[in-house]
Length: 303
Image (cartoon, rainbow, N blue to C red; front, side, top):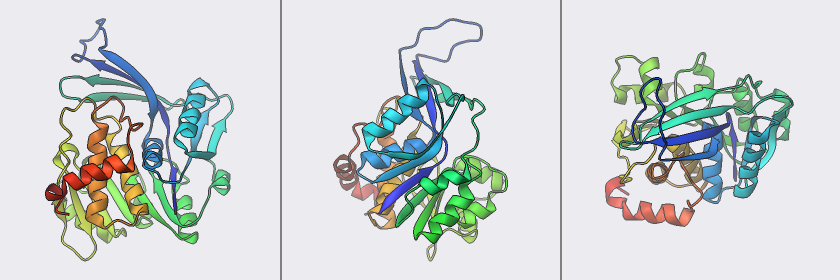
């Protein structure tokens, strides 16, 4: 059993600031960090850190940032045979300001004109029993979901924001994790519990609406939608990448065959741990640490 993560990857440039700067001013950062970002890439690194066998599929430029991303994959054990190197292209980058007091951030993404992931590159991926994680950003995602089905894989779809013509991809997902922003766009004015029920009707067996520190709304076939708590992370440094870590840990837990509540608890704890440092750092994350924290919070999660 293994995970294939297909989607965007970005080289993040983060600066921690005492407060957001005024326009036309010069300011000193408290500290900074550069690291791998992007929904599918950060999820892949998380699942690999937890011990999963992971392959990543996405596009990179043939520049220094692309090389550093590939090095990060190698260091974490992520198979990058499915990475498409685009000659003469620049790897996407993001400038991120993080306000130290509350951990809130502002992200500016430069996609750099990178081409879409080619259908032909899907041939290089290790299709077989396991899970396919999609961030829905690549046009090839639906074809990837079809190939995953044919290979006996389940599909986890992460939708962080509104997408055009997303219904066929939602219908192809076994597990759907969406943001509140996505729900507000798709179902304006609808109660979140009813929105979870509507998402289930679209195809998946499990639908999760993530609410950050507010926990999540969970809908599962055969049960009424309900609220599931967030894990109290303590001092929040930065929420960047926390959702991506959540999805990576959820994919890992699904690979382990955990029951739904335990899988969601693993995701919630991992997402919380990611908030303790800049950029959703997962280098110190391990299955042992994660399960220890989950076991300590059994009362909170009702396990």
